[in-house]
Image (cartoon, rainbow, N blue to C red; front, top):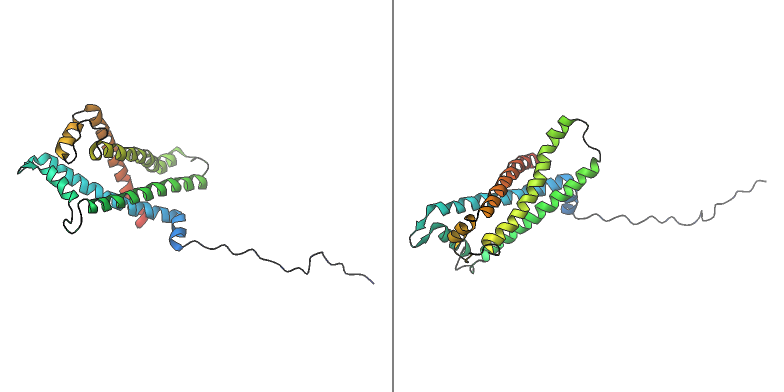
Length: 214
């Protein structure tokens, strides 16, 4: 009579590995390419709004004197005293700065990780030169102009907010600080080049923002 052979451990209970816990929905969404594009779009809107407001405010440098002081100096003082006396001086200004810093960090992180995702998804180069030009011109210029804009932000803060790179800097004297800075031709050239980079970045970024948000 034939004997039935049992496999060693056949009667042992099967232990399934614990199911991986899912991250919260916002984290899962951000891990996707669509989520990163949304973060870039929303943070881009915040920074675009700041750029427009900053541009309008800085145009006051051409208004000259307003009473006993320059118009742009009144503007700078108004920014530092927003909602005063309800809030202490510069509190609202710093809240806006913190919001912009968070938006900038989110924007840069989303852009960097999305670039890595795209490279991993397409390890080979484009076969057609036409496809390469059509698809990559915007994305490649965005990377380069993005790096320039990031460096420009640091330089601009050191030059006209903190005053480290401006030997004639005086806190609160917005008009005189701008004039002193722009009278140095190397600095003026840096500002011209960087502002062109900002314009190119905003041009492509605005188009991409509408694509991402539909």
